[in-house]
Image (cartoon, rainbow, N blue to C red; front, side, top):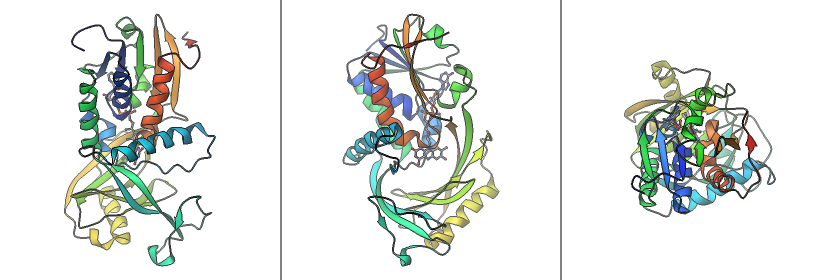
Length: 320
Ligand SMILES: Cc1cc2nc3c(=O)[nH]c(=O)nc-3n(C[C@H](O)[C@H](O)[C@H](O)COP(=O)(O)OP(=O)(O)OC[C@H]3O[C@@H](n4cnc5c(N)ncnc54)[C@H](O)[C@@H]3O)c2cc1C
């Protein structure tokens, strides 16, 4: 794209901003991403990340976004270097519950002690640092650029390009400003992979649950949720509790060497904001507040953003 005036300015280079950038650049638009942190230093880089499952009713818009993403990631699992792989695993609960349509129930012998229900599923797992690098390569290949800077006002940015997309995650709290966005802290322990092939995850999510996701070479252990907690320093006590819960379910993890502890702040909002607004002369689509499902929703939300931005989805609301 060189230094020509961009058609679209995307603020944010986490999974949401990069996916939007790729979609728009591959449609032939001149795309410039502005971000204060490198993709490797975003919340997105810390996600585990599991895509799906989509368990909401067919007519729910969230379900539609999830299904678009699951299809996209399933295709990416076929391509080397994306960091995406299809993995089989168990979705479990300590409480008995209803059957999940389309999923095969676990036999009693497949459930660890203390678990009352479980289902087998095959889902895309995404090694996020590798996947974010892949998205960046794809953005550049389509002519998109990235600029490292803090954005203080969307209105000022509106003078630089006719189209804007706000993908600032938790940053939307100050930038918009949107006080309904709040951090929910998650901590992971990364260990060597002792030979695990299948993932395991417990639901429902409270403040702590058991989950592990195997990747070539390492396993990500979770999970925790600390509402309104912005502490970025890993908590060693929490880390040991995470490890112990996973060992109780999968004893092969007991002697796995700990490689790292990671913390990320999920950008939680009562609902994802995916909405068009007129900002002076520019059309701006807000695409933020994906909470603990940003990877799962990324492709569905990016395609909708592109539709809103290029004008196929009705007139924008005027911003006061
Ligand atoms: C521990 C953990 C586990 C998770 N597991 C999963 C999972 O299994 N599946 C799943 O789907 N999701 C998962 N998530 C959720 C997922 O990580 C998030 O929903 C997703 O990363 C949000 O992406 P984002 O691009 O909106 O935000 P971020 O990745 O935070 O990116 C925001 C971008 O905006 C930029 N920015 C912000 N403000 C400004 C500003 N003023 N000026 C310039 N740039 C700015 C930042 O620098 C950054 O580039 C998990 C999250 C955590 C923390």
